[in-house]
Amino acid sequence: MALRVLGIDPGLTRCGFGVVDVEANRRASLVDVGVVGTHSEEPLDQRLLAISLAVDEWLDRHRPDVLAVERVFSQLNVSTVMGTAQASGIVIAAAARRGIPVALHTPTEVKAAVTGNGQADKTAVTKMVTRILRLQAPPRPADAADALALAITHAWRGNGLAVPAAASAAGPGGTGSGLTPAQRAWAEAEARAKRGRR
Amino acid sequence: MALRVLGIDPGLTRCGFGVVDVEANRRASLVDVGVVGTHSEEPLDQRLLAISLAVDEWLDRHRPDVLAVERVFSQLNVSTVMGTAQASGIVIAAAARRGIPVALHTPTEVKAAVTGNGQADKTAVTKMVTRILRLQAPPRPADAADALALAITHAWRGNGLAVPAAASAAGPGGTGSGLTPAQRAWAEAEARAKRGRR
Image 1 (cartoon, chains in turn red, cyan):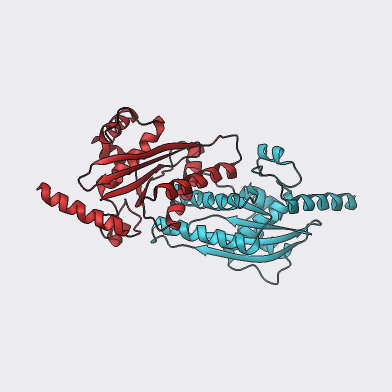
Image 2: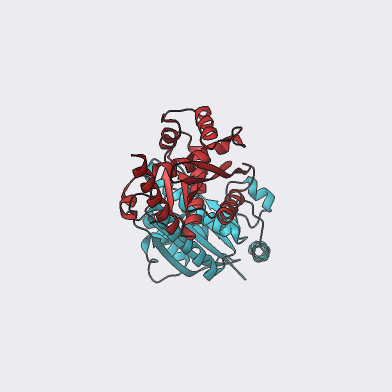
């Protein structure tokens, strides 16, 4: 009984995808990982179309129980943040159209969950993702590690899973779409595993 | 032989839609206008889903030749610009999925095209939209006037129409998706009308 999480690190130039199966005892396994890139010379509508088609393909191929997306902030680099926000809107709507719950996590939450340090650098995150997923080598392409870290973070934090949808909606991590039957079963199994550890 | 333009003023709280038919002699007629709103208490995924479904409905119902969208800038109000960018991404991808060309126009371009003054206020824009479309009263809801102004601007500026797709891609107004047969015919008719005026 594993929870399948699709993590997406949205971006216009590079959009990272990572799918992991996470058991109730927190053991996580790599299912698939990849990056979809678009070129800045392409027209904006064609770039967003490529991302839209890629998201649909990943959702259809892996049928995740939940989508975890990086929460986009208006950073200092305003030239890239608009494209990132446009990509994230497409990604979130694509999951919502399929009734798949969506959860948002900040980069700090992801770094803290995976490495124990919210200020960890990219190398440390990649190293821990490699270890958590029991891989022989760091995941390729390198910039897809963030998407895997997002997916692991979501399952480990239990956002939108162990808490009722109504409470989750008010919290910072979930968007409150409720639990799928698979998520509910996983949350119950996780609760049993926690009791067993005590 | 009219060009049908769907103008969308993207936003998470209020997303404006306006459809106009524009003849080659620049005469513009109102086809439909409306606003889709979502509440800030709703989960983000459900808000973006509502916008995604609304865009599809407007595209399917009116089958526009081209979509004109307000170009989103990272404004001072960062709390709303992210939602606006997410909505615009969904809107642009929805048109691209149908092969409908997308053009972006700045608020200044819209104000200049409709009123002759790039710094015009909302009242002036609404007044001119009402006059251009030969309406008895200002369009309702009031904040949908911007979407109609966008659509009129696009047809009048001829962006993505009178210029080849390749040149349009490099320019500020178009996203270079090429011309549909209807657009090509309209551009030719417009060129004839211009010659006739000389």
